[in-house]
Length: 636
Picture 1 (cartoon, rainbow, N blue to C red):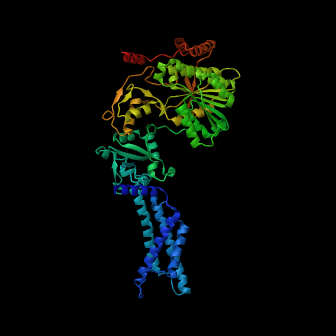
Picture 2 (cartoon, one colour):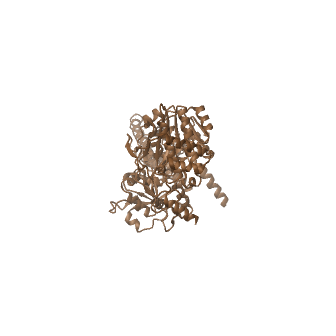
Picture 3 (tube, rainbow, N blue to C red):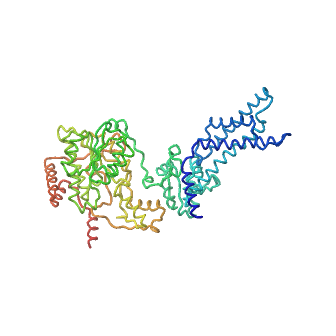
């Protein structure tokens, strides 16, 4: 018996997941109209002094029924998806039945004059309208409820909607009628302590003060994307108050941007970057298209977070060919699968290559002759590179040299080097190696008769990038903690992946050669605050349910990052978020000798000599004292 019941449920779910053909819905509606018309004739006949007919199959009946079928076809009331029946469908049924009734009443006026009789008494036509509408709409509601019952979420998320404005009420209405029922709406939250109304849709409206006295554990808050952006820009305390209530926060795009049949499919959990307000980037699309359209563009490090997003954003500007270069085989394969699926008409090549292999890189230039190069290939993890300085120097310095010199040789129009804020007053090998690479790029731009525009872009941490603190914290929270923060005072600059890559593309078109572009990173963020917000976004209480531990600064790690060196100042550009770091560094013959010596020592794996040369080339490179202490403490 249990197996039979399970089988019936499985078959029902399979049937109900597919759309019922319109022809079948039309037939069902026709049957309902037939029953409604028979009922109307029966009720009219019951008060007439003639014999009562249970089934009326007169010419007048078939005419009446035929008019209703024509009305169905005119208004296409059978074309909607029944499981999503709502107000719009109800209005469509009113249209069809009202049209039929009015048309019959008009025809009655003609037939009574010419033939001396009516299709149906006027009162019967009106009675039919009420019966037909009720049965047609009732049928749709029943099917919708059955669909919801079969596909009901057995453990819905109990949720509030933030706000009581018309848009918020519309969100709530959509949630209440949502067939998936992923969220079970339990009320509204208002930002104001004085309530304008106590209930909407019979659901309570509560202030934050009222909720503070109640338990919101395992409950969610749904907020429109527009309201969320407004709050993060103007009222950050409200977000903190909501997070303090232990509510999981979900965002919903504006109604006009919905492209899915169920509102539940549109709702996404709020990420940390949604709470760190960043004003939208304004790009000069016309100039970007002029510089990148119909060009062969090479991106090194194309399998990485920044490289792959640069590739995605370049697609919009219709390049002739995209060259995706990386030595990481598996991530590069994943990018290839994504592009084949999402952009089947895109002309691109995936090239597995190591930028330290000069001959391999040269073969790419000879084969494809790129017009623009975005060089993002690098080793970036500070503690790992402290343990492997030779590899950091090999990839970050010699790899950059190979790609840049070949760009010069093959007359590449633009070469955009992706650097880091860790190159400013570096305290670690990774930062110092990137600073040396910056110097190399600047030195090449100073050569006479250089046709390539060499441009450097420098920015801080990118939220959610591979190996960054955000994914690391997510794993620790998933495992129940503790979250490890190196120091309670440590701060970092952050920007989103999209924002960083958009500014890289913009800087690429404004550069004339030799500039170091610094991006406006906003205000630095305390990593401890980030950790607490992530814990609350996951529905836990910091320190009580997820512990935060301080592990001490890692080798080469700074407390505070910088974007500009002490001897640098900035110049404005036409873009408010992009500044030029005007360096006073002069490249003389001794600097060029140091660079050449460094290249030779790196290639010969002379680690100690290369580190000494690096310190001479980058005199501001000094190991952080706190890092040294931390390293000694670990050793002890």
